[in-house]
Length: 258
Image (spheres, rainbow, N blue to C red):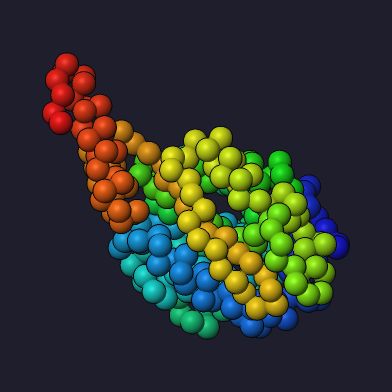
């Protein structure tokens, strides 16, 4: 696998080589990525006026899909590959959609603290070695607003899913041994996320398995308790959280509300 260099750092281009880029979008679509990305977007509960970041946006397919579904949000995509970004900008122009596509790295996001309501990462983390995964998740936590959430879709690591040659060929060039759900959830907790969970798995064509993750940036307020109830859609589990947050606020006055 060839690693390209930019801004004094390296990155993995589509399929490992620049000349494969024109085949990337059709292949990923054939795998079924649009379907699983759509499920991830459903879970994010995006609201009008929010600001969203797509880390490792590549050719902009998912960022464009977000903007099409939610025209009233601001979508920012980030990727280190200038050729993929150029292709993404052309796609957005053809679709008459306004997107911000920036060149940069997940480990050092070029955005201020607390500047996004949602951060997405789809089919990106498996490209990163362990240290870069950890730093990318820390950066995602840093740029999220209080009450914001992280939504990740990625190749399942350390699982017996390689049933034919294509998955073995793809993963021999990536980092599947560093992409287990336990590792990613641990990095999310270490980064300061609350309630990280690997809430579902799915299968693409060619025997490739993917995992879905989500985590939130917690704020000890009544509003955040309501947000958590809304995000997880399980009132019986979230009610104790709600009571804790109310009592946390009331505790400043020496009272208990519930």
